[in-house]
Image 1 (cartoon, rainbow, N blue to C red):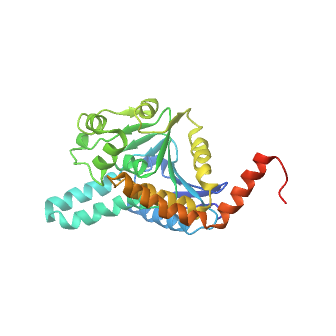
Image 2 (cartoon, rainbow, N blue to C red):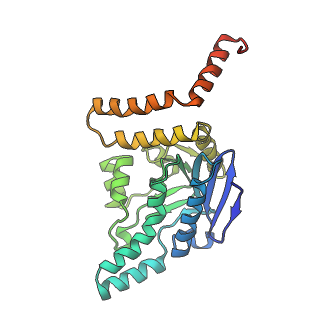
Image 3 (cartoon, one colour):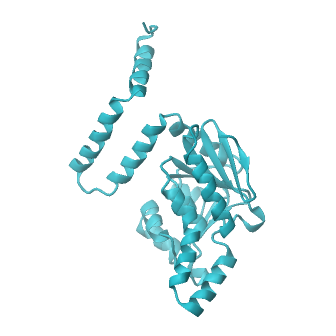
Length: 269
C-alpha cells in the first residue's frame, strides 16, 4: 500500500503500520462531511491492503480532532428545531461514522493524540484499541459547555475506559485531562514528549503488525467477545476454539521451530 495524500486525510505506511492523519489543521481537524467521506475511503483501502497489519490514527498539529464541524452541528440544530429529530439523527450518524468505522475495524488500532481531542474527536480516540498521548494532549468532552447532550456512545466508551467517577467528572463536571493525567487515569497507555507521540504509536502498533495478520485480527475479535461474557468457562471455550485454529496454521509451526532453534542454539536440520 503506497503512501497517499488527500485533501483532508493523509495516508502513509511505516513498517506495516498504516498511519492515517486528519489534515485540516486550520480548523483543528474538525469532522466535516467531506473529511468523514475521505476517512471512510482511506480506511477501506487500509483494511483491504495486503501489507498493513495495524492502524495509527492522528491529527495534523496542533490538534488531534476538535470534534464535529460547528457548521454541521449548527445545521443539525436548526433542522431539529424546524423539522424534529428524525432527519437530524441521520445527519449526526453520518458524523458518528468517522469513529464508529474505526471502532469496527478488524485491525489493531492506536490513537496518537497529539493535541486537543474534543467531543467527537474524543470519540475518535476512544474508538481506537489503545491511546498514546503527547504531553500537550487534552481530552475535553465539552458537550455540556455547548448545551449539547453527548452522542455517539461517548458516555459508554468513556466509562469503560476510565470508570464511572472519572467519566462523571469529565462529562458532567467539565474536567479536562491533559496528557500526563490521561495516562495516570488509564485513558491513555503512555505519555510522550510533543513530537514523539506518532513514532511511539507506530512502534507500539508495529508489535501487532508483526504478528500474522489473520491471527492479530482473530485475537482482537476474541477480546471483544470475551469482554461481553460473565462466565469464565464461556471465555475458556471461546479461546479454546480460536487457539485450536491457530495451532493448525503454518505460521505457528514456523515460529515454534524458530523459537526452538534459538533455545537450543543449534541450526535447524
